[in-house]
Amino acid sequence: MNSFGRIFRISIFGESHGEVVGVTIDGVPAGIPLDEQSFTEDISRRKSGKRGTTPRKESDKPHIVTGIFNDKTTGAPLTILFHNENTISNDYKNLVTHPRPSHADWVAMQKFKGFADYRGGGHFSGRLTLGLVAAGVIAKKILKGVKINSQLIEVDGCNNPADFPEIIEKAMRSHDSVGGIVECTINGVEVGLGEPFFDSVESVMSHMLFSIPAIKGVEFGLGFGSARLRGSENNDPIISSDGKTATNNAGGIVGGISNGNPIVFRVAVKPTSSIATPQVTLNTETGQPEQLIIKGRHDACIALRVPVIVEAVAAITLCDLTLIAKTQRF
Image (tube, rainbow, N blue to C red; front, side):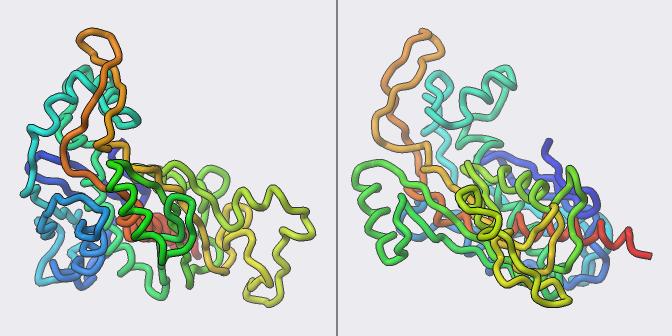
């Protein structure tokens, strides 16, 4: 449900307009240097501020409340809290009876019998990705020698980064939103990670990636492009005893197991569903469709803030798979 991992195990909690959001991480080795400044770089990358992101401003200061002593991890469960400081909950009152199209409002009402916190999306908000980023910081510390880099490579169908600001600006002026594609490359991954069949690298990584709000597609290596090639074109010739291949169409994973080449994958980020353009949605009191005007502060392009979250999820996944692999060595 709200927990993931077998050894490096995380549990996220909180709501967008509740008192806090946060994460508890079990399985963190003792003795890792850690303080609040350790999170500054990655949390800053996730923050709003760029043109096209939400005007909601939060300090996002991490509060490490368990699992730390003298700025070192103790081996006990590590809990990190982030206080919600800038909420305007009145903007969401009409969503009780008018759920947003393509948002979790309606399904949350049904699943949780009307008890779910609807303010700011509640537990379904992207605000909870703060906990993922925090856990990713720790996972990166454990994954020595592994370098993870994500970047936004496409916005609204355009793959020229120089054009992204203008595209996003046009969407904002029209009270709309745009999606994008984020690519992640991971270097330094050891050979042999992954537990086929059901815990292959792709399986576990995809599980985590689809847990990020707004992710609607994942592909590894050439992904869907490989279906348009022949085997003679798609195969990656092994050219050295360390497993290096001449090409990397497989994206660093074969048979669900890492092969020592860079792991490469991409995710599709949908356009933000909360837009100011009038839309039609169900009035749950009358049972009839009506026009909806969405209030509140929302991202015109949530994909701008996704790269660091993707890195965190990749680090969490690989950290858990690495610790699992260590238990199997004699």
